Image 1 (cartoon, rainbow, N blue to C red):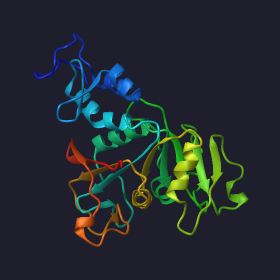
Image 2: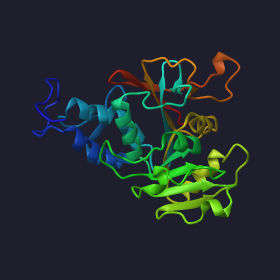
Image 3: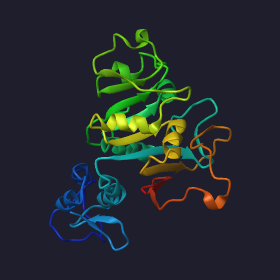
Length: 284
């Protein structure tokens, strides 16, 4: 964002921190020392802001992403976009797009803050995502495909483009399925059952490769399995003001029998144009 500073901006430095510069600073933050060097400070209400004068959008970036940046090199976080009634796609599987452009930019920022991004095989087959960073500055994460039976078609973007490395997690797929792969695609075999891989084993395998900051992007079944396993440190859910009816549900797992035992966590809310973003802090 460029132009004159808002009337309520803090005038500490002559230069106004804009959106792009603020984001570049956030990309380098992984510790308290990094935050100090970047010019991030805690507000009295627990939020984050820049020490100098900044645009409204730059302040929004600090408040929204500083906590995730400071979670360190080993953190798992997830994002879902859904309707008011909890659907992530229509009954026919159409998921383009549940939420608006601001939420898609948010998703790309989450990718840029991750070492790896995880999706399930059904998401790849239905949506053919690229899983790359295009709406903001930042490096592409390693694309991790959970596909224990080896069902992903070779024509999908994760196999045909060379924008980012792809790690194809298989378990029961035979050798014929996984041979003659394009450059940049690697097979990693992990133990699995009829349902798929154990989320903990997936994260351990990625951490062993130096991929400690992991975004679980979709779909709903995959995010639900990591959430139910207690392995997510943060969960971002963006709710769009529409109702799908008998659509594809988002979060679904065996929950508590009593409302008093339901999963509750500290939450923050952010406006993303017409959508509302909820950030749940699930850290122990």
